[in-house]
Length: 259
Ligand code: ADP
Ligand code: MG
Image (tube, rainbow, N blue to C red; front, side):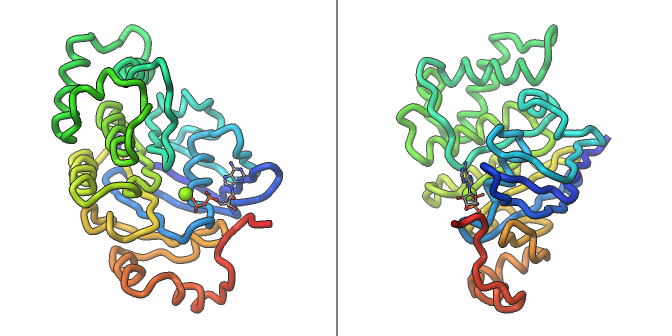
C-alpha cells in the first residue's frame, strides 16, 4: 500500500494563542513537499502539532496517515505508525548513548517480539554512519551532548535512515550545515526517497532544494499556506525573496502570534 498522508483544516494554539489557522496538505508516497516561509510564520508549530507535542493544542481539523487518525494517537504511537520528525533544535540527553537511544527507538517502531538483534543493529548503524561520514565515536556519545549544530543534524538523518519512516518531516535540517555536510545530508535524504515514503521539508532557504528537488513547494505566512507551486516557486523565492508574495497577497506582516 502506498503512503497517503492528509492534513485537513488543521488549527493549533499555543497557550491559548492560535498559530495554525487552517492547514490543508496532502502528501502521497514518493512525493517531496517543501514548506518555505520567513521566520515566525508557524512552520515549526506545524511540525510539532503533527508529532503531538503537548504544548501545541489542536483545536480543529484532521490528520490521517493511511486512513488512520493521527490526532488520536499518543506521541509514541505516531512514531510507531511511521511519522518521523527531525527537529530544528534537537534535545541533548545526558546519560543515554546515541546507540542506546537508536536501538530503543527502532525496537519501539518494530514492536514487541520483533526486536532487532544487537549484531544486526550495530552493523546497520555503522553502515549508515559511514554513509553520512560520521565518526564512529558518535555511536557511544551521549545523545546530542556537545554535538555541533551540523553533527546534530547528521544525527537526525541517521535516525531517519534507521527508522525507515513512512512520513518524514525535516524542520530546517539545513541550518548550521556547511556545504559539504549539506550535500551529505541531502544524499541521505535522496537515498531514502521511495514510493511508500513521503517527505515534508521545512526550510527558510532555497539552498537545500538545490540538492533535494521537491515535487511541490508551499509558502507559509500568518499560520496558513498562502501559495503553492512547483520547484520553480522555490527558485523565484531564492532570487527575489518573499516580498513579492506579500505584495501579491496584500500581506503586511507575515508573522503569526506576535504580541
Ligand atoms: P517558524 O518555525 O515559521 O519560524 P514557529 O512555528 O516557530 O515559526 O513560531 C510561530 C509563532 O508561534 C511565533 O510567534 C512563536 O513565538 C510562537 N511559538 C512557537 N512555539 C512556541 C512555544 N513553545 N511557546 C510560545 N510561543 C511559541
Ligand atoms: Mg522554525
